Image 1 (cartoon, rainbow, N blue to C red):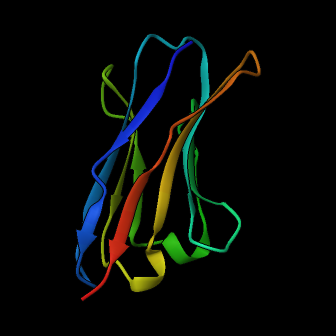
Image 2 (image 1 turned 60 degrees about the vertical axis):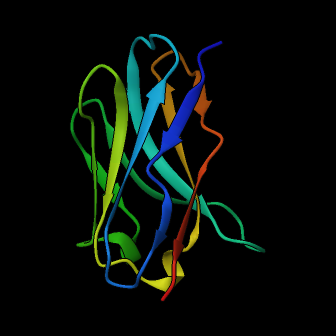
Image 3 (image 1 turned 90 degrees about the vertical axis):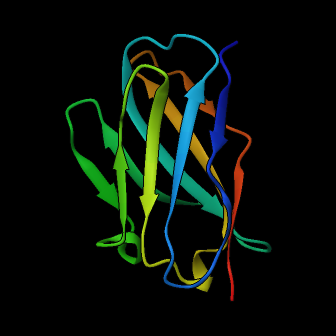
Amino acid sequence: QVQLVESGGGLVQPGGSLTLSCAASGSIDNIWRVGWSRQAPGTQREEVAHLTDGGATWYRDSAKGRFTISRDNADVIVSLRMNSLKPEDTAVYFCSVRTYYGTAYFGQGTQVTVSS
């Protein structure tokens, strides 16, 4: 079973930047959509952004203009560049991959903390 592993989380001051990356332990064929979601303590997981195989992107309103999702190379399935971070961005961030076959893969998450 292919696993996704996120990296790049950490502690950053308000206004700072982080880039999250998601790598797969093996090959995933026929990728339809890649994305990032997040979950803050006591809240439900929410989708942050996704990118389709055709290049279409979607961002939640609070991420628009600050976050950029991209697919980089064969080793990194998907990245999320986060600028102008705010305390309310604090959460565990999860990457996901969905294939045309209907298979979905999720990572274990990486903690992002925005605090002074």
